[in-house]
Image (cartoon, rainbow, N blue to C red; front, side, top):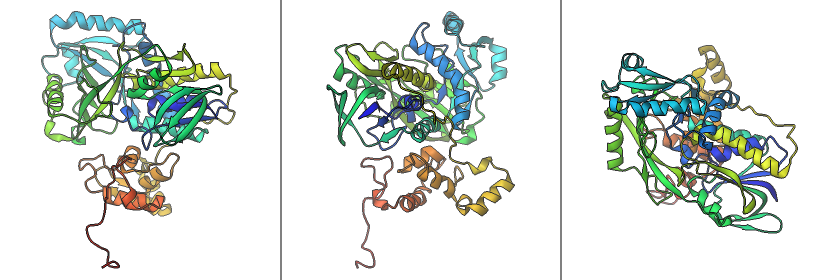
Length: 481
């Protein structure tokens, strides 16, 4: 029997697991996918929001600002990419200035430091590629950008090395209250636990409604994006927003921590929780709206497009609490934007709730630091030469677009909670994220996965499930002929 079972291995579940691993608790994270960071957490804007546009007085506003403050020290403790590049929220007409000023008032109400309104001349000095129609903006210096994969994986790895168990390909079908605790019926057998933490993203309402008479409703809100080649990396330096509308912050233009440019997302409510396809109309809107902010967005440099589903709760508010009519069941539901930013603070809040229920002792062996996959490009020539002499695999380039070595891929596979699929390797190393989008490096990466894990290439998938990369032979082997 577990003390705590967390449903979901995205940023919310992984942050909660890491914080709970500070205690002497028997903890398990279950996820229906084959890896961490396989849902909403892998397909988002990768933005660390300042907190200015959250409604004052909401839990969303409180945890956004706290999560923002935690991000830089956390990135150093767990070794993931983060940059505080600042953000600009654009105003395009004097008619909209009252809305800009109303939003600016949120900065003080929410405790967002350093914000100010910049007028046209200064604005265009800060960002020369902005549209001439932009007449003013709110500048938020605490805004930032992060690697969402690196952050999610780092928190999960750190939780794992501190004793948290992870069960993948494990889908929860039913939750039942028993005399001994909560019984989770899954496709891989029953799991018994004292406490359930519901961090299931777009599926969190399903599990909540299994145990509570006070129903909630989460609508998948699809956001579509275009990612541009690294040659566009200097297009903007700040994250560029437009004044928020009914469905959120609108289309943004932002640099990424890896040197690309990202534009998006759309906001399309739909009823298929697993639908992450892009659409012609959606991508056309992304491009059209992005060029309103930055007219010369080089759309011919788009190297891929993608979409993700945000978990939009009807009241647009985080739900983080023990349920009144389901004791020892803790929701972390409705975690949509700014969920990525807020996740470190959400993890602390969830851990505090669970600790209040179970009264555990502290884990004296907790280690809050972790080192990520070594990037040889960060080494001096002398140190890189020493590394290759000791480990020749670091001299063998597998992904030429991103200059990822065999050594890095081996590390990604063999490290704690290591990669088992092509996407797992990609999220940990960026092999396959470059201009050719894995067109050339996939066969070599598959060879390495096969060798390191002792599995046939017929078993290797893109992202788990039935996404096998090789489905058979085109002709008989010499031995069979």
